[in-house]
Amino acid sequence: MDTKFLIESFVTLVVITDPIGNIPTFLVVTQGKGQKARQRLAVEAVLVATIVLGIFAAFGREILGYLGISLAALQVSGGLLLLIVSLQLLTGNQAELTAKAKVNVALVPLATPLIAGPGAIAAVLVFAGEVHTVGNGVGLAVVILVVMAVLLLVLRSSVHLSRLLREGGVELLSRVFGLLLAAIAVQLAASGVLAFAHGH
Image (cartoon, rainbow, N blue to C red; front, side, top):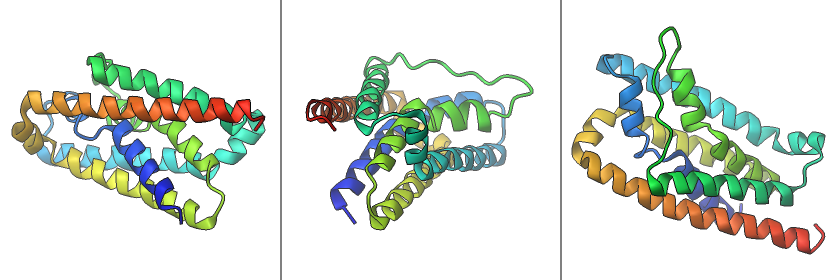
């Protein structure tokens, strides 16, 4: 099991899903609901997001092969996509998500695109494409589960955490996560370009 691979995938997914930064959005879309209802929605959202990411992790290679996409191309495009997400975090221009009547907010917008959005899916596809051993495959599955568990814990504790961190603390962590994600995105895109240059 490649420790570097596991650490990189864990940090990337945590930064992309941005548990702390998602607290304000979660509170907005669940506004007017009781504590038990909010916790139920958090469980449903994380469960659906886990299934979505799990599908892409399990069948990532098949999806790439069917579409005729190389890992290098996915690394470059995934890097560019993550860079856009990081810039949104850094500038505070995340799209505002509001709950619609008759729509289960646990599915939209919480599960997707808030948690299992394009950035997270692209990252999982890239990491799935780099899995060449059973150990790394199991490791990636464990990483996804751990990240989702962290998300669930944060969302279930969102009311208390928002009071503790206050608006400034949440904003600061979003900026830090954005900076980290930008560095990861550039490295990912650079690796893809190098792979193209070497004909892989």
